[in-house]
Amino acid sequence: MNPTESILLEKIAGAAKEAGKIMLEAEDIRHTIKAKSGHANFVTAFDERVQEYLFAELGAILPGAHFVGEEEGAEVFKEAYETGYTFCIDPIDGTSNFLTGYRPSVISIALFRDGDSYLSVVYEPYHRLLFTAAKGEGAYLNGSRLHSSKEPLSRSLVSFGTSPYDPELMEKSFELCKMILPRCIDLRRSGSAVWDICQVAMGVTGMFFECKLRLWDFAAAALIVEEAGGRITDLNGSKLSMRGPSSILCTGSGVSQEVEHL
Image (cartoon, rainbow, N blue to C red; front, side, top):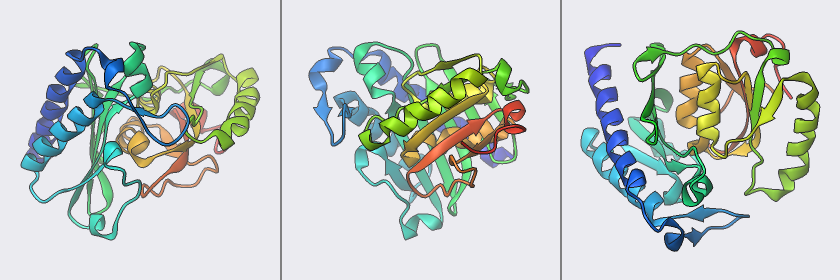
């Protein structure tokens, strides 16, 4: 990583850590809930505060950068985002976890350069876990290099998401669970897709899948798992467009050799 990239990644990570303090100091979270469209789709005042903070801080780091954020409402890349720098932010991935005190909840920041994945930062403030990645430079957790698992599916845990905001996908989601469960050690669900993808990057799990995620749910974590030697595609095994919502199939290096699609 050249010095300019290293400094930029360090500044973005610093902003994520400061934003994490907003989560750690949050009180009376349930009293700040607002409902959004879709089943059990919530936003809290703290989601909004974290996003506002990050937009301001990251905008100062890279003046003129574009922003795609969950609480901003835009789900897809615009033509203007194809040039220059664009941040894609999920201020609190795992909002339902956050408001109920169930962990994990993370801050997710992806930086695109001329439309391509460039840098990623994911921060879990409760245990001070900082995931970072730069394109072509590897992925790290608190400075230590990450490597996805080489274990086969039969010796792996598998995590999944239920696409709760898209109830028409419920049946498909659990049909996939029924298909995968006999082939792996067991299934897990954390409630944070960003966290689950990072778990594949860490080698804790061998696979993660979900029928539909928004761009901010996977943009940062996708680069992290790829730089850790894992693979991330849509459920058909096709390359992610990184331009809007998609299904997700994320596998460690071991599982990747035997599972190409679901």
